[in-house]
Each structure stands twice: as structure tokens, then as C-alpha cells.
View 1 (cartoon, rainbow, N blue to C red):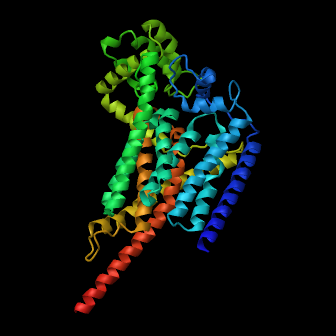
View 2 (cartoon, rainbow, N blue to C red):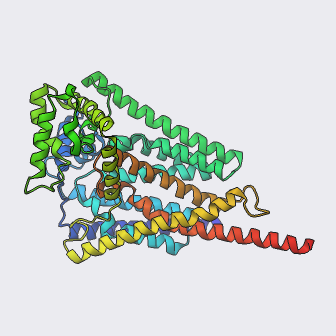
View 3 (cartoon, rainbow, N blue to C red):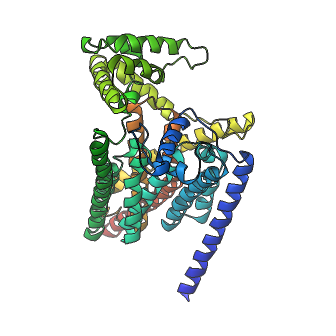
Length: 471
């Protein structure tokens, strides 16, 4: 009887999610006139996709091949159209479903799960699916990696671990910044299991799951690096670091040491031109791409070789001007956490765009609040600071499962913030792949706080009763 009820519940959820996916796709296709929007970075992805038409790259590009493969598969070369837009909207909906079902599995109330899904499907969060950019695909892979690892740790389901390992291994081929995301996933999962003093079997699953994620990502990305070395002569995943690091040194490029005398005048000239460009943003962070033709002519280097030279130049600048570099990192951190919404997310309405920004402010502040809120009682229980607190007070299934998802999500969010602010001029777009994790942390953190508070209250009542009986 229970199996019949469970199967009916599963069928009902499948039908509901199918209807939600269809309605979401139709709504946004109509709102965005059936065509994705091209960003300044879209052309670089389309060039790689065009080269991949015969499934063989003729040169090593700055962009990894993951997203261009999706562009090629959806017939988006030379002009992205309706199919790509629909696929990206459905990728976003899939990410929402994976997280929502994970929240349901962790025992969150249906109303909390529904509220998460509703907000996650509003224009400010679906907005990235309307651009020819890799963020939506990156988001789905990160969420699949997090959810799969959490489910495997809790339930020992092999399918969840396989899903997580595949997603984490592939995300580096879509967005190079996440090539090493398996490391924080593995470390945080094991650390939380030890912190909560769970039983040996669960701790072993956390450790094994993390090691498999690191191993699978290392094997796939290592194979790509070896291939690039064999075919192109460069053992890199994506030769873009030299260009992105140039975003961090734009304000003190004059201080290049003498060994880079051939680069200095070219970089200064293009930086200054970008600063006074009436059509630019007067920040000059993207000046390096304007300078590439002159740099190639002056050095005779192209692509990966030029990027490697720029890496050395930028590292030298960072050593000479470490304080200025830290200033740039802090500035990037502010931009990374800014509540940006474009005209696409505002559906062409200035009022909706402002409302979207307000929603993002509320989400970001709520996220920070619930993380702090849940930390206090969690530490009290762990340290056993109240007399009579059991050593494994955090090891209860519901408390541990919520704590695990919250901490693993925080690990990925922290990794994303660190990598993007240290290596490039991080704008809010670079936060997009972890936005749904930030949103999911809010109901999880609130529910975890309620559980922890109840646990502390129960311990206090037990200890008080013991003292009274002894008296």
C-alpha cells in the first residue's frame, strides 16, 4: 500500500514539474521574442562552436569546449535561435527541480520548497538563460554535483554519486574557473561529517564520495590537458589566465619591470585609450583584448604563448604592487556580490528591473542572515557548552542532512567568490552559477536554525529536570 502511495506521489511530482517546465519555457520564449541575446563574450563562444562543426578543433581557444558543444548541438552557428533559448530555459528549470527535490528530501515543508521554486523561476534568476553565455549550463552542473554528493552521503545511492562525479568533472570544460571545484566539495563534505560526529559508515561515504569526485574530475580534465599538450603544444585547460589577470593590474601596469619593456608601452597606450573611450565604461578592465593585435605583432606570440607571457608579466606586477592588487580584489568582491539585473531580466520594463534588483538585495541579505543565524546554536551543540549535551547532537539525520547541504553550498559559493575575485574583474554575472545555491541556503538555514533551537531547548529541559530531581 505504501509503495503504491509513494509511486503515485512520484508520478504527481513528475506531472507537476513537467507542467512547470512547459509553462516556464512558453512564458520566457514569448517574453524574449524567441531569440537569445548576444553579449560581448558571445562571439568568442560562437567561434569555438564554428570550429567544432567537424568535432575537431583546429586551434586552442581561450574558451573551453563545453558550452560551444551545446551551441553546435543546437544549431546556433552562425546565428543562435529559438532552440538554444528553449534548451537554456529548460536547463535552468532542471537546476531548480534538482535543488527543490533535494530540499524536499531533506524534510523541508512543502511551502518552503514551493517558495524556493517560485522565486527561482522569476525573471531575475532565469535571466542568464536568455543570453548566449555559459552560466546556465555551469549552474546546472554545479547543482547536480552538490545535490548528488549530498544524496550519496546520506543514502549511499550509487546513481547519485555517478551523477555528481560526471557533473563535477564536466563543469571545468564549461567554465574553467570551476575546474578545481571538486576539492572544496570533497573537503567540506568530509569536514562536516567529522564536525557532526556521525557514525563510521556515513563518515566513510563522505570521504569516499569526495575522493571519487576529485579523481573523476582529475582524470577528465587531465586527459584534456594531455590532449592539448600533444596537439597544440600547451599543457593547459584554457589559455585565458594571462588575459583575465590583466584585469587585476590595469591601474599599475606602468610598474612592469624592465624584462617586459616590449609590452609596457603597448599596454599603457591601450589602457589609456580605453579609459577615455566615450563609448566605454571608463574602467579599462577589458583593455587587454584591444591590445592583443599589437602585442602579437610586437612579440611574435599568439594565443596560449601570449597568455603565458602575460601571466608572467601580471605576476611580476602583483609582486611589485601587492597592496594595489588587494584593492582590486576587494573591489571585485563588491561587484561580485552586487544585485545586478539587466534589461533582459526586467523583461524590457524599468520598473520590473528595479523590482528584480530589490529582490536580489533581499535574497543576498537573507542569505547572509541565515548563515549567521544558524552558526550560533550549531557551535553550541558541537562544543557541548551546555551541561548534558550529547557528543553527537548534530548527528541526527534531519539536522545533519540540512547542515551538510548548507555547508557544501557555502563551500562552492566561497570557492566561486575566491577564484573569480582573485583572477579577474568579477562582476555579478560571474556569481550567476551559484545564485540558486545562495537562494536554497535561505530555507535550509531557517529550517536548520529551528531544528537546532529545538534541540537546545530539549537539552536544557532535560538538564533542568535532572537538576530538580537531584535536588
